[in-house]
Amino acid sequence: MPAPFFKTTQLEVAGGETEIFEISAPPYGVLNRLWLSQITGALDGFSLSLYTSEKPAGDSQDDFSEAEDDDISAGAFEVLPTQIVSASSATLSLFEKNYAYVVNEYLLNGVLRHSKLFAKLVVAGSGDKAFELAYLIQPPAGEAF
Image (tube, rainbow, N blue to C red):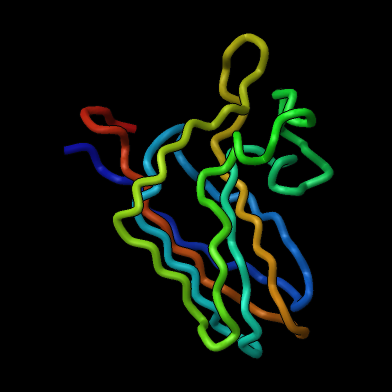
């Protein structure tokens, strides 16, 4: 059985802000589990979305994209639909959800430029807040990373 890709990382965001984070990921796979927990700051609620490209995620810099993603809806690049967490909760937990994706950031010669997903974290309230993100990506059935 091929080994899954598991990663944890810490994200820091100011309340009332939207941040786009690059997170390590294989170039394709199935997002099987995700856990995001606010570990510091007042609980004011937050939302999280994952994309395979920067610009649809909301990053105006768009450092990597060779795709003509200016004219395509963000939904075409969405891995995880927006998940909203209420102010009374500090944690988002998704298990056995199976969101398949393929990173579409290639150079013209077909070489993969990077293997990243883009997390869009929108945080309510004010003040500095830290989050811990953990996720597990499985290879497609019968394949290995």
